[in-house]
Image 1 (tube, rainbow, N blue to C red):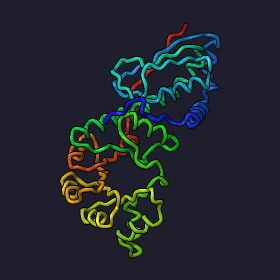
Image 2 (cartoon, rainbow, N blue to C red):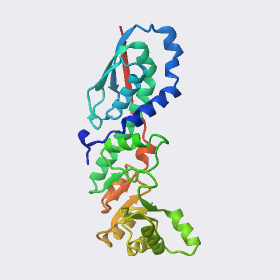
Image 3 (cartoon, rainbow, N blue to C red):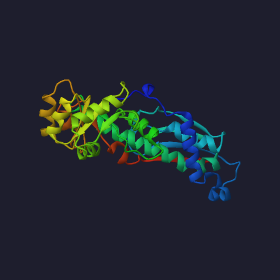
Image 4 (cartoon, one colour):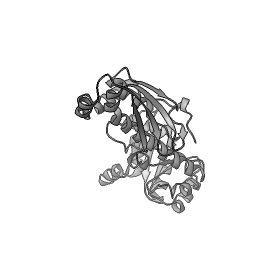
Length: 292
């Protein structure tokens, strides 16, 4: 499954503006003492964003906003849309204008582009590997950087995967701790599902996390809309899925690039991977600057 750049919904501009402003303030970019004492304000320059490693482009418009906020005279031309895969050595964008502002915004711009391109690139690897095993859809989790969830989930989409629930209001996901709390009150899994269905909006699916085949059978019997199979190997997952046609199953836990193909081959419809956002390495991107 590969995302088409034109199909991707970019984070809201106000969210981008706010996040970039906060990052520039954190870096004290308007008080860059090094640049202010060594680079004249009227000196011009140009630069190129170069991918030092092959990967998926993501975050260039956010990087552009960092330069725009420091100087509206900085002109950024983007050559590749987010979601595009490029090879090592590709120039993905160019910039020209006041050199001082360019240098002061450089780190913030690169931090966004490197982080988001890293997530998109790792996601692409997971999606491609899962496709070799079956038709499962790879989805992310809420294991995101506080304050940057919208950006990181966008990067996941750029990499070709889908988003799980965005926040705790988006869907019912009864996890092991919820079931443990219910069990301590003498409430069984079926009653938990009924309570969730009665209390949640009719538009929300009821998903239950289980960690044994017996719990999975209970969740299916309770008419859960989605059953999340947590930390189960393919040999355990396959008979559960085959025994309940028509039920949506999600595999989670223990998923990595070495295991995802076999997990996809079990027939599960969804595979959630926290590593897409919590363990993605930043992609190596450089801004090669040419002073005038």
